[in-house]
Length: 294
Image 1 (cartoon, rainbow, N blue to C red):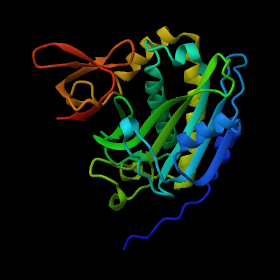
Image 2: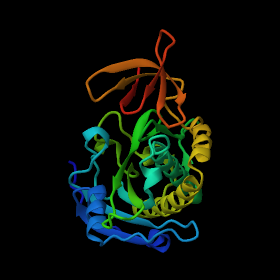
Image 3: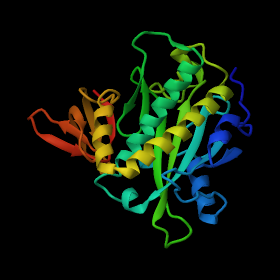
């Protein structure tokens, strides 16, 4: 018999110590949507950059009634098992809207999340169940482990109430299956951290430790990106080579217009788009698609 899990207001003492503002609720429709509403009405405030330091706000819930993913997909989570958070960061509009570099914002979110998960695992002395168990990113927005989806990311641009400001807010939604049992996985293609790593702390400790690192990671990585977006893009491109799950695999890209493209994922372009090489040797640029392995 499956027992219904009850939502509770998250307690995040470590995250509160490093974030500029933390909004915690037991239930909401979507943390990204709640963050956008609160930015719009001024109840979630992000001060301007001072000395290169970025403000980071956090919106967290134990259960989302309408969790969202990319391209209209639904993100399913369960209270007490899945971390559902949004991180709001104020960055220059010139960078947020520059298509030659803004694709890297999503990649930064993925790298920050991998750093946070791996850092938490190391802190608590936990260990993978298998030697080849490591975390990767499936372009453009999924956290993978052993070819299964452990988490998802959704980046959205939100305008500040002051229309004359030179900044916008990027809200990074991060959903992670941390302590979800095998019988509760939403799909056969999904997984949970506790199924691959032994010696983990309680869910509440994990969620807080990961979120603390996410705040610090977004602050550090985005400050460096703002200071030198094109230089950082090249650095990030090299870093992604080691953790890009799709790279070197035969994949099928599904586009929003219903078409598909099959080929080998070669790597990333300078703007963070995916390079897909078809059987005839032609390289194609993939900017928006769902990617699956063949």
